[in-house]
Length: 381
Image 1 (cartoon, helix red, strand yellow):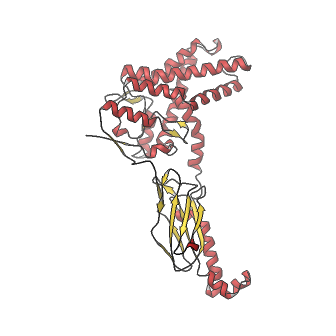
Image 2 (cartoon, one colour; image 1 turned 90 degrees about the vertical axis):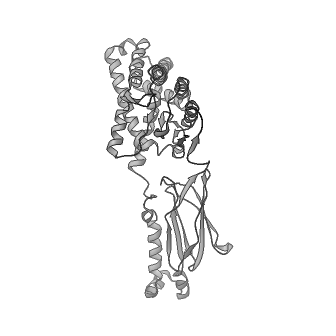
Image 3 (cartoon, helix red, strand yellow; image 1 turned 180 degrees about the vertical axis):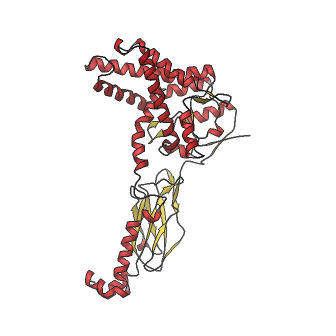
């Protein structure tokens, strides 16, 4: 299933950059999230403190009465996150006090942070956070003392759209149909197909032959998969590999070869062999345990799979699909790109790509797949 895994590898670089260089403002460290704002508030407080009124007046050229009024001002800050602790940028944040004049509005920045300053001391406020696709969040009453800067650290938006756990009543086949339907909605960054991963491995049921073919075909004809094939053909054209001619004819040959490679790999490794050998072609996300055990699980997935009977067994389907696809390519690749050495070389490259993809699945892609956060199953007794 080279197309499916190559699509995932394509976003690995972007995701890796996000994980290695996270935004400076994070949901897990609210004191750091609002450090700038808090520092600004502290600085303002120091300028107007009673003991420093004389120096503050020289700096600001304000009268003592105005300085005394400013010393009573406070602020409210916070960071908008979801239930998994990931920041949620772009949320609308409304502040309301006891009188209409206290109403204020702002938008959480790219790091999910927001702040309201210059608030009257000895006043009561409420904060409301809303964003399309999420259930609105409202705070309890917030009492702001003179000169106090309140930091809200418990803002966690719940994704709208019903319960986070779906109880499915019915036969094993009916449950499998529903699980595949939900899997077909899993997309990295909201657009990259991520259909061959199971996030609720404990409740997963085996796929029927029909569902295995349906899932393989769904990945093959997905618009993003088609675009990925066309893009890869352009890259191969620029690199002048395989040894087709250049120009429109050469691009067409490379496009056809890549499409045939990916289709044969997906269908053989994801449908034909899994159906014949009664094996499950999907990656079963572990998600718990030590990092070492999860890493081991990801590395072994190309070689060890789950059978339709639920037992672990050698992954003949995936390895056989990669090898068969490489062998079939001998029929349409240029003579200079044929031979046993190239078959084994392509097979080895495909296996390494799959291992890298499974590691990304275990440690990265779930965070980048929005629908995966709210989809799980509980089988009825």
